Image (cartoon, rainbow, N blue to C red; front, side, top):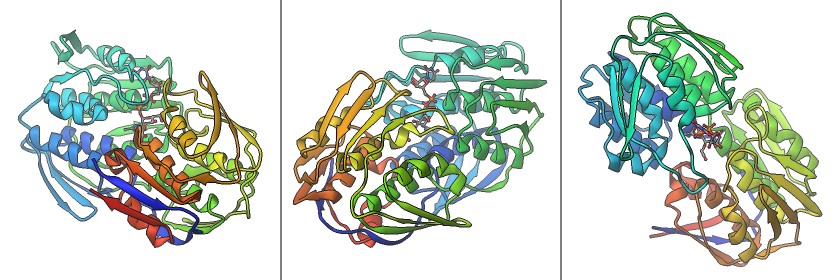
Length: 418
Ligand code: EPZ
């Protein structure tokens, strides 16, 4: 499963370019199924999650060519409407294909994605929303069998929670439905705007992407387009923390500062200096990170749940006591036990963690519990005394391209061992 060997105690300094967004490219690649033509996607990160997504596209009959960070998808030959259980199990977020497959083929068969390391990950909002388009969905034996007896018809949907995936699936189902769809309480994450931009580039008529109310006027068909994926705001924040925790300085190139906005006040409270020039950001850390009174994860534009684990690693070596509340996923504290093995002083009670900063962590062997928890453990190793061995790093490879190479380019010592 692979390990990272991290030698702590080095200041991180340097300049890096941020990868394309994992959580943007996955729904955009899925959206290619809706397009009867060729789409060219630039800035596609090299991740195991994108590998699985491409396997699903090919299973559905698309021909996919990848040259570096550019993926070309020819979906004229779509000839299937199912996703095999094996591929669903490799990546539970494949549920995002549902709306696109239904929109293209009028039917879909996938296995219910099931939970993952950070929670049960129900899809009730996806199912109840898609049914409102006139889709019949039979759920049995862990399979979802979807059919459209008549035609997909636009509708009005109010989401009980601004679910990112449900918003994306509704947009994909609505894009070629008859009539107009309105999504109320839509997710406002930047990845939603990026998906809307891609679909509009294909001829869709989506207004309000990234806002709380989105309208989609269905069109008859979509044609191929060329699109550049937005930078990954979660990866950007993760690398910012790596410099902050090691009294370093870092310059991030090719970011969209507004997408990382929720992080700035938190890092400034911790004593970091942040300067922004266009799509470039420079962060300078204080000699020692100060505590962060309270972090509450929220839907965008609140503090992102995906950087809760990495910032917890940062607070573990801060001067003072910090409080983190995880409001989005019910079991996203699996990295706490591993951080404690490294000498962190953390107490949890339900969705709240109280972190008493310690002067330094000590290297230990730890296990990545999930994608973002794994990145947090590597960051903790950077700030620890001695050697930290982080195993099960396949989780990390799902979301961070060239993670160890980038950290080493900043002066860290992170070696991959098979
Ligand atoms: C997306 O997951 C991201 N994944 C997640 O990133 C991210 O943490 C999450 O949005 C929140 O920002 C991708 O984009 C591929 P949700 P998604 O639907 O769409 C509950 C990472 O580390 N819910 O907004 O699954 C759900 O259980 C990953 O990159 C329902 O109850 O997130 C959770 O508590 C992790 N019913 C909350 O809503 C539903 O039908 C947020 O989920 C759907 C969701």
